[in-house]
Amino acid sequence: MKATWKNTVIAESDDIVLVEGNAYFPESSLRREYVTFSNHKTTCAWKGQASYYSLLVDGEMNPDAVWYYPDPKPEAEQVRGRVAFWKGVTVA
Image (cartoon, rainbow, N blue to C red; front, top):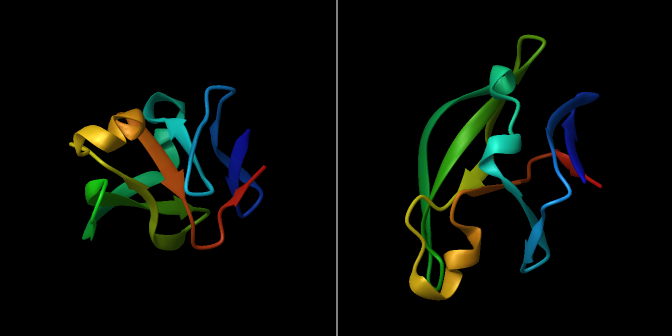
């Protein structure tokens, strides 16, 4: 699977974990040259606290478009070390 935004591949992997309809890619598959800091955080009742990255492609920012769980709850251990996408990022 590939995650793309603005015709740019952000991540690509065959090692995908599907949770609640979201494809979680290995964090190592992220193309770091397009990833930048975000201080945004949210909380999921069963997965724990999510942290975010923003994307920067061709000078255009997509804030908080990538999320991950740095320390997921035990029932969500399968998403540890993985990232998922939204906000216009196409996953196919």
